[in-house]
Figure 1 (cartoon, protein in one colour):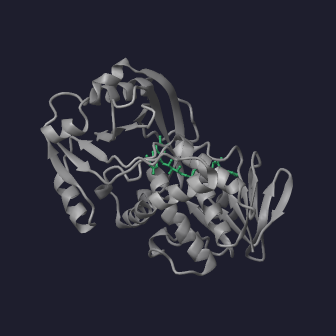
Figure 2: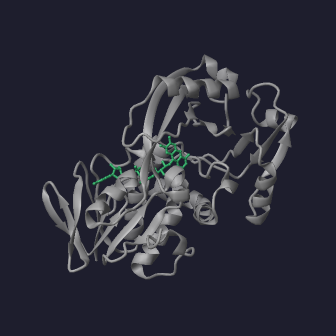
Length: 361
Ligand SMILES: Cc1cc2nc3c(=O)[nH]c(=O)nc-3n(C[C@H](O)[C@H](O)[C@H](O)COP(=O)(O)OP(=O)(O)OC[C@H]3O[C@@H](n4cnc5c(N)ncnc54)[C@H](O)[C@@H]3O)c2cc1C
């Protein structure tokens, strides 16, 4: 069975790896270079921000993935020689209005969420701004250095004989004959396949539009900055009023992010840079001494309620979608690709597939 995967972000590459490991011959087609869009631009927090504010379908994917991440990163490092730098240092949330909901959610989902006070806050993060009295602490949340995760995925696929990677080749459309997908069109010509999976992130809807199918996935720009700080200034992910700082092992600290509905425009703005810097320095004043080394934007694939579309395209045989992971594609990826693989190969699904179906949404 030959399968084409359209789009080499975290979802497409993880999907290719899963299918190849299940014995499927895969061609992954990427319009640019693999792992350079949202999956590169993201922060790599392995949890939805404020997880209790999400619906059960997002929680189901997140919980499954969180249980699997350690194993994934270990296997990827063995396959690729690249360490995706999974840090298990927890998530600290400052200034929360819905703490009661958070604690209720934690009890229901057997998740570890602790209200903590001043002494514990500064024991965990001594460099945070003065005057903090209470916070919520999720010690089990981890983060991954996502550009390294995508590099590891890429290298692992390069080493996998069942996978062919075609880069700098946009898929111009899917080819349908008698209600069934038979391949894709590229500038170089047609490529045939038995199955096609669309994992094109924010661009996924555009591939279905010519078939008269509406997939409500739209780009939402997120800007981020990077401080070149010394190791130890921040040690865990800290979240305050929707903005966060994320430490990397080498001391660098990411600060993000904006949420902008500006179409497929990936420009950065001075205003966002200043705002992100102000918020980060307000959270951790020591960052004022660190140089801002980089500033970028990525396009999140937004879907209604952030629930991704995972499953078969109605009325077109052998065409599938795995897209629309919005703010959580890095955390949701492992469960999403396992679910998609199980659906394609007729295996037992890891979670109930119904909430992610394309039909009727
Ligand atoms: C600022 C920011 C912060 C984020 N932080 C986090 C976080 O902390 N945790 C988390 O879990 N998630 C986070 N996210 C979200 C996460 O990055 C995305 O949900 C995820 O990367 C989506 O992966 P993807 O593979 O679907 O999309 P992408 O990585 O965008 O990949 C899609 C790929 O498809 C290719 N493509 C498109 N059209 C075609 C075509 N016609 N032919 C061939 N190829 C095509 C594109 O070039 C691209 O490489 C963040 C995102 C941003 C922008």
